[in-house]
Image 1 (cartoon, rainbow, N blue to C red):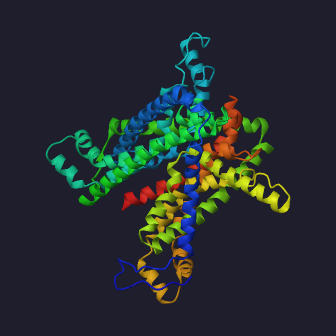
Image 2 (image 1 turned 120 degrees about the vertical axis):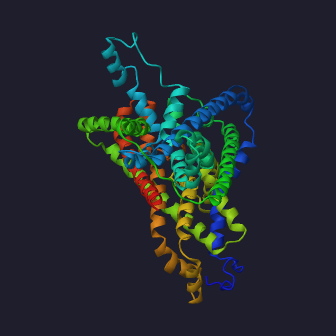
Length: 559
């Protein structure tokens, strides 16, 4: 795999190199990512035997309206919560601020469907909250007093926002930390109050970061299936699921999926527009954070209480409820064999998928470094496509592709060997692993690429001068120096695989349950407490990437 050396006279413009196995492997991975999208388009073009007119008249308008309302509400609320929390812990210094800086990330550890299940049980008319309120007010029956039903659009917007606001908090706080201190100080010199500095200077400068965070939160909202379904919101994702599973209308589900992809493309365009503005903002200003204002007395406790509210409702209450229910369940029945089997299934499929995602991400990231031409940015963009696609849409595309390949393998085996192979991809879980690969490849590529950029290009030139090929340079230089980035990428992908519900629900083999699908099944039967141990395990593992993000944020803040 040895290739000619690039020109060292002009390192900024490396010489053209002949294609290698690295490049063709990257091309193959990009083709694997694009295949489900092509299958979706092909399936949608098959028509749906008159059912499309039914979908157009009775399903799509309602689903589009519900999805638009949900996204609008979540977008407004996460921008308010994320931006407000970021400003609070950046502009003010008070007792407990250092704790809040990382605690505000904790809701990321709880999948949206787990928060929905927990609050459905907590706020049930016969649940602990309403029972306690009736006791305090002297009522005996839910007929005399009950709170508004949480199974509503308002309930879905609030609960999803409580979990998704960290997507806005993270980039906005980073922007506040690196905003030009001289602008804020100049405004204060001119007598502008701090609250007006927030509206006139901080928010306009942080607007690109806010837009990036909101677009990510809205993509997660589109991807959600468990929370929306149990809170009574008939979103596009739910419509795809019911059209496919209930009506057995695969072309109709594919057509709705393409409509969702249009929404995703709009969100990705918004995110890219925001990044363009972000480059302009940061390059134009000198990166120096301003000194936070010290609060004392009641003001500091008020600030701490205000900042703790999202953590309380987005993490502490649902996690505490799960811990109590899990303890009761453990004392009553212990760890059942079924739960242990599901835990092993979850760990096994997540570990195998993580290994595949890391290998593919490594190939693409390293090839992009070795061949910085025009083709690799396009390949990278295609390889990252799966992360922007909702899990249900992705699962549908994978199912169509895998089913076609299964039929081809079975037909070939019968013709050549006289035996039937059955479902090789779907029946063995390979299709599920394939879906995980497509969904989370962007995380792996991005993290490993960031790690590789820290290795100076001169190391590549020195290794190549000493006779190392691309593979030898990677093995001897880049692999040892990028272990930390790869470990971080592996952790993020593993936890996301454990929490993933949409694709797992639709592509898992028969009698193959994970912790997430077990929780979904119990919630569908209305017995959330039966799955409290599984939910608590998912939350406990989900805390790991939060710790990682908090440590990275702390390092950035201390620079």
